Image (tube, rainbow, N blue to C red; front, side, top):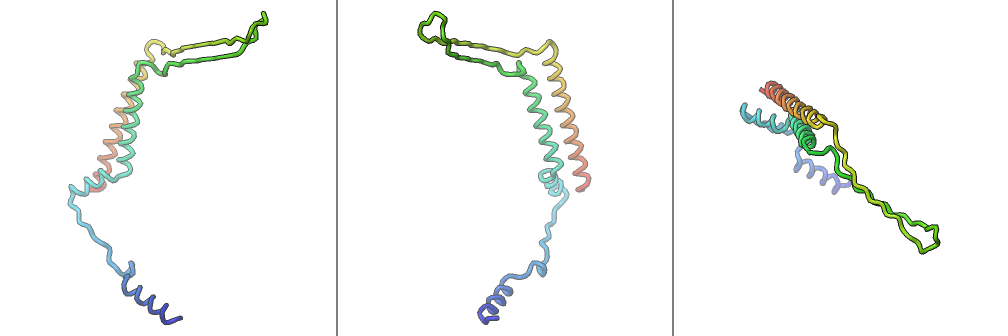
Length: 135
């Protein structure tokens, strides 16, 4: 081995201690800090909060007055008239809106409210379990 390469390896080893030799950093947390960390970092709690947000979004969608947006159709077509006159065009416009049968919107809203309550209860239960495990 060349002397300069050998010296560089020795110098690097002296400057950078091996991770296996260094002791792991210890962090001391009290119970309040531990529980706050669990609330912020727990994947199951994050997932529960996201499920509640999803259910709340579906509820706000269910509360809209119409289940779908109105639809506007426009058609244009060229036509050759039978009388041999110059070309003309056919135009067609259409506007449509879907209406739900009576009671469907209210049922959709009720189901969405129950889903929000269920997701919220499941998130609360997951938080209690995670906090109990951490404590």
